[in-house]
Image 1 (cartoon, rainbow over the protein chains, first blue to last red):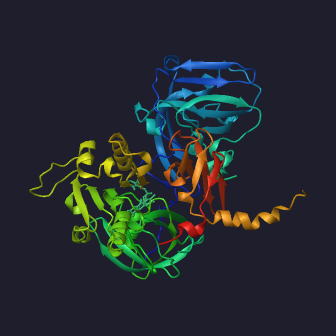
Image 2 (image 1 turned 90 degrees about the vertical axis):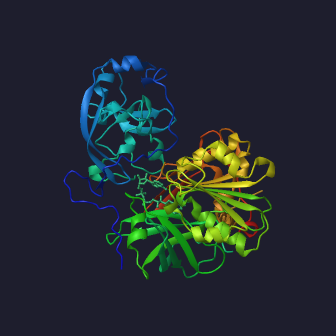
Length: 193
Length: 241
Length: 91
Ligand SMILES: Cc1cc2nc3c(=O)[nH]c(=O)nc-3n(C[C@H](O)[C@H](O)[C@H](O)COP(=O)(O)OP(=O)(O)OC[C@H]3O[C@@H](n4cnc5c(N)ncnc54)[C@H](O)[C@@H]3O)c2cc1C
């Protein structure tokens, strides 16, 4: 009798529970890939005072950037180790932002949203990434730029990100509204709410 | 026919044979299977000993009443489920099945319109069911198939399609290698190929397209540009690019 | 007239959910396009099934299945029209 193993879930200390390794880079998206010209691209942070901080592509690229090598974990159970990115730290983008709210909603071109606690994206934990493995970020992986929050499940790393809106409560984003976890820590296997 | 069963049925593998070097026909006996229309699919669920489950959809190559259903699976090199179904599953082994599913991408013998089928690779599977249903109903509605595949070795059910040629003509199109002496060169299906090889809008056909998502995208866009009404085109995307 | 209890929905709703979903007609909340569900564009697997309007990309239906539970959200549909099972379930 043939026994189905599924993708092997390995005993590897780098892998959170229930995850398996992949060499490829699977594509998962809740909608079509938006075609985005960097000439029209803009990133914003909108706060409760009504103030909106904006960066166009040129201003964004002029910000100090960092090379980042991290492991990423998708809730659909694949993990990819040692991925390398280039991006702008959210600490840099938040340097001038004043807010009393503790949560953000990330918004993407195409309408996708995902919610995050502010403290999960500051202190060197999150970036707006625009290069992957030394090349510009492919549209199917979120180019021109995506959020990168590698310590949470990868649906939090919104592709085609266009801005963050501060929110008082941790209101759910797209997948969170349909039962995925508000927080999404892979090490605690926070897949569903 | 009864409505689709909400739960999962158990099917045991009763027949299997290779279709190509990477594909296999697998026939399951499914007690209480209600029969199925041509073009419907099933969800196949596999469970590993530790409880992990994977579900994939597969078109049914067979049609009509009876408790046997035939699937035809192409093995994807890095796939989780298809290599297991093609290489590992043995006669007598069981899988869980949910179906028959779908009522949109089906063909029924009482449909009046001429039918154009356009397949890319394993996308031919639901059309095998349709050509079989057409033949067994002795149907006189015109039906023809345009089958795009990488190389001559990749053909599923070539003999069966050849035998049906008098009632359902198959036009073969090769994208990467052509057989010796073939009059056309290899290449992707273009709007020109489609114009030459498929029923034109004037014949008011119902056109079915099935294959990888990329294939279906390209062909459906080309057909719309040739003047086919979007409502006269039915698509089934298998995934992939 | 006095209202009834939700119990009375048992019959009509059970009848309603006993239908072939892919041929059911629905109207998009956003662009008013009317199409069969089989014509929607489905994204999001394997996290879930996100069915979008083929005309305007509006999200029509989201289904998330997980062990022991499934959820269905149809906010993007103005209505869904279903043929009675006898009409369509034939071989
Ligand atoms: C309605 C329906 C009917 C289908 N009928 C058939 C059928 O009759 N015969 C058949 O062989 N398959 C059919 N498929 C495809 C099938 O469901 C699986 O997607 C396929 O077998 C791959 O599963 P896997 O677990 O082996 O690969 P996965 O582990 O799911 O994927 C492995 C890799 O292949 C890519 N990939 C996934 N699907 C495809 C694809 N179809 N083509 C190319 N690349 C892909 C993935 O992105 C991934 O990178 C059908 C799909 C649908 C939706």
